[in-house]
Image 1 (cartoon, rainbow, N blue to C red):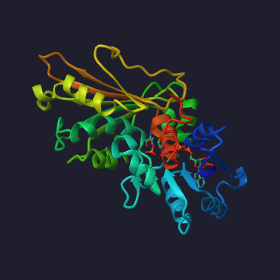
Image 2 (cartoon, helix red, strand yellow):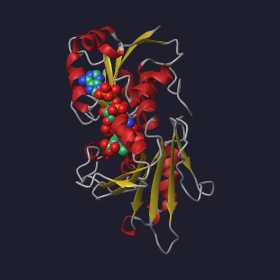
Image 3 (cartoon, rainbow, N blue to C red):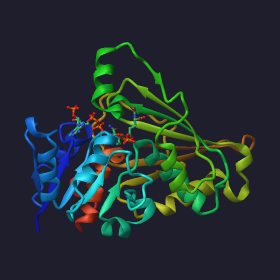
Length: 310
Ligand SMILES: NC(=O)C1=CN([C@@H]2O[C@H](COP(=O)(O)OP(=O)(O)OC[C@H]3O[C@@H](n4cnc5c(N)ncnc54)[C@H](OP(=O)(O)O)[C@@H]3O)[C@@H](O)[C@H]2O)C=CC1
Ligand SMILES: CC(=O)N[C@@H](CCC(=O)OP(=O)(O)O)C(=O)O
């Protein structure tokens, strides 16, 4: 069976990567709007109704408009934007956290943000298992490649070559806080410090766990072993376990597209009693396009890793 897929926003950073991953796959028939038509509301409405599945790779307002334009059709939607991540009627597109079955049966899917993908992969299972508390104000430090900011930030970083580091989100109301809190079932939104480095793609999400949260029953090795067991059957998420974990986590400027994610738990010695939970992913891979293709595969009853770069 061939599934008709329309990518709304196919000329953008995420849209292009999704096209790339779908190229050559016989299970899908792509509906493509010519450049002159890609922002034409009537043509988008037509394509949205004609498709079996639409993938929205648009700014939030345009994604909301697309969801409205699709009303009255049976078209299933995967929204890569942050417009519907905690909205009623939408399923959060993180199969490893909410279950593959729910993705397979959903009509409206909202894909996770790139930073929440790392944060939730680390924290949600540990809170669920009772190894970390829900009522704690977690800290999240993160770096992203500049493609995380779409075409606008790519242009800026490629023009201002002397930027070595960019801390941002300094108003402390980042749009990812709601989904981080909701899907880890936390009492408080985390304190989130995002930043950008002069690499096109790649991301590290770093959650420090201070000493008061750790005891013998939830020491760093216990956290690691819980994550290893949760993701033991995952095709995309790998837990780097002691003693095989690297002694440093690197991002490379020339990194290739990658749809997996690596997690690691680093524990201080017994005297410090602290831990650091780290996730490394590609903001454009598991953080965006790879997750969209994984969900598309699951929705269509195909192997979840088909077309992914692992
Ligand atoms: N980049 C990343 O790492 C991630 C991105 N996302 C999300 O994915 C979505 C797309 O992001 P990204 O690809 O980075 O952004 P880009 O800015 O690179 O691409 C957005 C695309 O949408 C097009 N567009 C804007 N308005 C409309 C409209 N009304 N109708 C049709 N097309 C329109 C733009 O065209 P034009 O340029 O001509 O205006 C552009 O081609 C965003 O919601 C983003 O938050 C999610 C996870 C990670
Ligand atoms: C570097 C950078 O600007 N990153 C984006 C997040 C990218 C992402 O996850 O996209 P969503 O907008 O779909 O959540 C930001 O902080 O807004």
